Length: 124
Image (tube, rainbow, N blue to C red; front, top):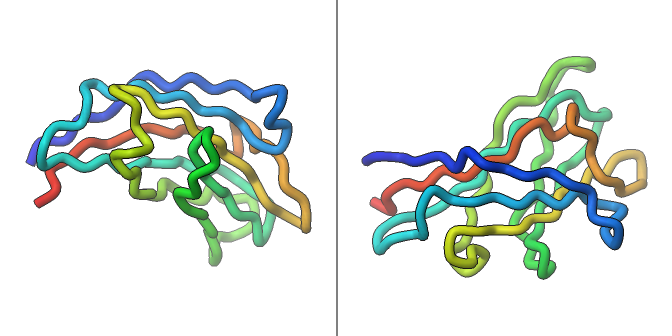
């Protein structure tokens, strides 16, 4: 099984999505038969009980990262979120990433969500 990582990730806060950060990823190639895609999300220090929510730019829910048990002030780590093939358009995927903490939702900072990339691997 050979895995490929999407290197290029563009981060921008969309004006109409003030509660989320827009993340545009370019895959190294379109998904082939028998391949799956997984998001690898590197989370830094976030508020206690904070959660990272990931949706497509069209609003399709992909998942929530809830890093519990992390010591205060420590980075949370890297989490895998399945990326359905229908969320990918050719070689591109556009995501909205939000941080929910203390009853509020906002766009995470670059130190809270440090990196989002795509891993392509075989389905088997």
